[in-house]
Length: 117
Image (tube, rainbow, N blue to C red; front, top):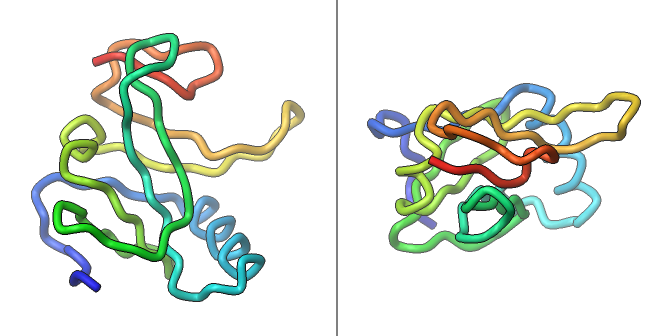
C-alpha cells in the first residue's frame, strides 16, 4: 500500500461526520483495510460527476489523506479538480448523504452530484 501523503500540495479533506459514517460503513463491510475513494468522471447534468465508494486498493497515481481515523484516496486526475474540497456527511429531513463542497466548481446540479469547472 502507498504511504499516506501528509504534505501534498493539493488536498481534499473530510469532516468528522463523514469520517464517522465511513467508519460505520467499513465495520458493516467487515473489511478494516477499506478506504474512502473519491473521484471525478465525465458526465452528469453539469459536465462532471462525483464518485464515492469504499476501496481497499491503491493505484500508482492515487494520493492518500488521513483524517479523523480514516483514509481518503483520490486519483491525481480527480485531485486536480477537487483541490480544496471537503467531503461531508449530512443527515436532514430530506435524507442522508455524502456531500462534496468543491471550491473549484463554477456550478452544480440541483442534487449536488455533478458540477462544472
